[in-house]
Image 1 (cartoon, rainbow, N blue to C red):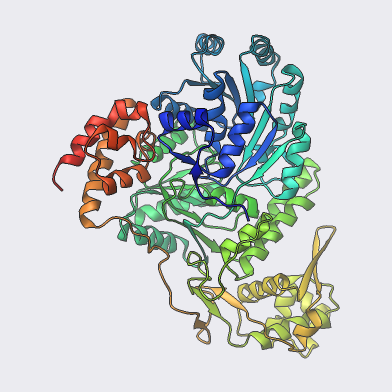
Image 2: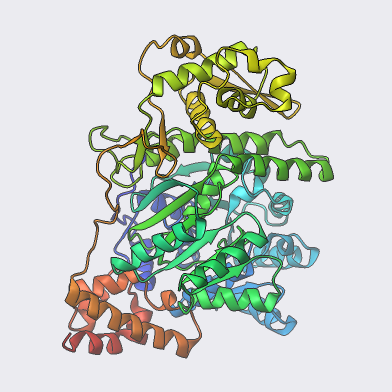
Length: 628
């Protein structure tokens, strides 16, 4: 498995740039390899998890070569925040988007030619316009173009979770700037998506670098959705009780859901607001800026929110409904703990979520004429992952093609399953046998909903008309909810006892490789539930833990940390930037722990480069010198 440990930088030019601008003395191995590809002008695809330092991989080469890197970036908010952060580091960068006036745009291009800036962000649709292609060709002819970088490259692939057709046109830039290296970056890409990105961009002899997908600082939890607002409020308060000062993002499926849940959280006494594409631009900007500036604690949003949000201290991400794919889950949970500090990802799940997604995808397919098979497959993969009841970290890593060694006796200590927050079904073997028998006796021709209805003893028209009420297994699991049995069927699929077959969008369950053995009770079958789905006959597996043992500050240090946060907020307001752009929470914690007393010592703190030392060093040293 690829390692993600930091190592010293072998290239002195890269090492000098990274330390001077960002205050880092080391890089992750994949980062240095990707940076080398950019410096040398080679094609490369780099896959690093959110928080893994992708941005550095396309920012450093431009400094080392002294040329300009053009970055395709999908969202204005993301461009704007990255530019502001780079400028505070003393790095020349700019963005071209709809909010930039023509005169300012011309000035940016002039600076690109005279060497005043090293990085230009632009949306993919702008990059492929005739006007920008002309600029690109001129930069190339003047030997000012160092490379072309594509951020969020999973958008290129039709197999990815966020396919955007305009990204595919980026291949046209190869003809405009021949010989210029193209580097693509993403946080979420299965082997199939990686291959598609390379093909669609026309990358030549591309080096494919894949970092470690696992993010050990994240604690993954799945709970049965019961009272959503109560569950979200409890999670937020739990984090506050251990001193977390970061933000919370709650993802909902619909605009109406975001507004309803936000209002309910306000009634719980939380500072919350809704965000979705149906709001006015002014309102969306207001919510976005309040969250970035840390004056809003909780954003309840559709997935339209977050892709352009670079706030590093999001401590909690909640999915109030199942995401539409594992890739989407990895991308959205990746917004938590970008600073490397502990964070939680809570998924509130109901088996009905999958059906809701499938209906939405079906409606969309009917309108567009597209084949929904690929998207439906992604939904079923997400269902299977939730139902597997194995280590969440291990399951995510394996989905993206990597093995993750976990001691089965200890577990990862950072997911609900390994922390013992699941409930085991005492009658697992019996329940499994009955469900398998229903599948068998109904001819292996029906889907999960019908199997559950028969097992629970439904007298519905579909059951009666087919005579399934006369089967010996009819009603044998009448004490179980449909949601429970649906979850158990997903688990039987995950272990290979059943398999899902989809024909003409209709799903049926059939025996898998282990089907007969399970039905006959050969071998142990363990069925489990997230907390909240079990009945009185269930027992808690092991003792519940918090998953937040990594508290790094004692009480006095917490007081000092809050003082530094207040100072950071004041500086951010004066400069009109989000607080995390000044210093991340991780850097503030390092300042609290190391207590530098002079500028030389402060420059050794991770995250403090020369420009930030010159700008903020003295005021932070003064704050650190005061008694707690």
